[in-house]
Length: 346
Ligand code: ATP
Ligand code: MG
Image 1 (tube, protein in one colour):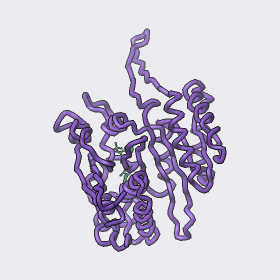
Image 2: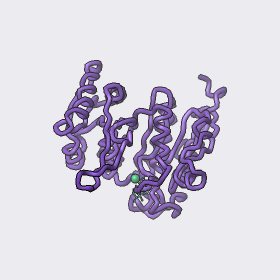
Image 3: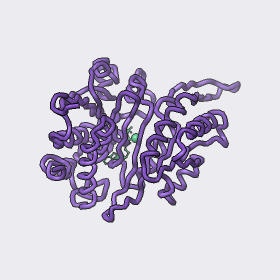
Image 4: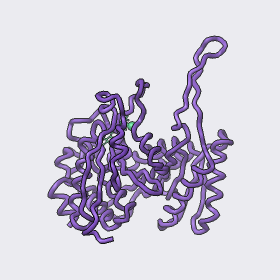
């Protein structure tokens, strides 16, 4: 592919809260790459809770229909109580584009060059409790009973397994841990575990282990170096990756991509952080790293590495960190912005 002839169309969806502060930072990082990647065109797209409040829809049809090569997205607010007519737009987008894997690397940067934590959580993205089939019933005494359906399929478990093995095979340790709770949920988690185990036959170079989700969280905090790649059903993967984020200082530095066979969306692991929104102190690193991952998935490895190296340098220098990492810098002062990132990237 000639980089000169192609234009890379990148959709930007800041959604809610700090998205408006951190997604522009990701855009700046991509812009600073210059000719490492093809000419880029950024397309602003709508979605989120605020959009829903104004227009009655969380994910407009126009956003779904706009053709882009990739999207960088900040997860919108999810109200903790049910709001009539609202459902999470990222869940809908993942479904519409069949982005069945959420890949979340958690890497601690240290001056010595050897990361304190270096693992990847591969989270199944389409099923488990996220099928959102909940209902409220009454028992014989008229008391409320809430029920949720959890769906695990052989197909989805196998394909997330394939994705996880492929990732593990490309890493130096080539180690994969299957996360489940099949001692309690023997049918659903049993199927997940068996399906991924079966996929392992095609990856003889990858060492396979398994761990119950509760003890995996314990181990994660006691001895994170045990883990290389972890593959988990949707809900466990969500919880594990937020927990793992605590090991590297802040949710504000942990990126992810939602990946399918044909499309990818970069998305920081954090949400809209309403508690700090609009205060110009959100950490933009998670979004910038998500942009790098997104570029890697599109085949621009050099570009991804350059962004990641620039971010690592800033973390090691530790002179312009945002408050979540103990610093005083604003999102704007953060050195990833403007000229500074250009210097780091050059
Ligand atoms: P949502 O419903 O959108 O997920 P939330 O209340 O769960 O909102 P998160 O965005 O998940 O909020 O953030 C959890 C905590 O981590 C918050 O206290 C938030 O301030 C902090 N946090 C998240 N992202 C960042 C960031 N980029 N920079 C600094 N702090 C962050
Ligand atoms: Mg959250």
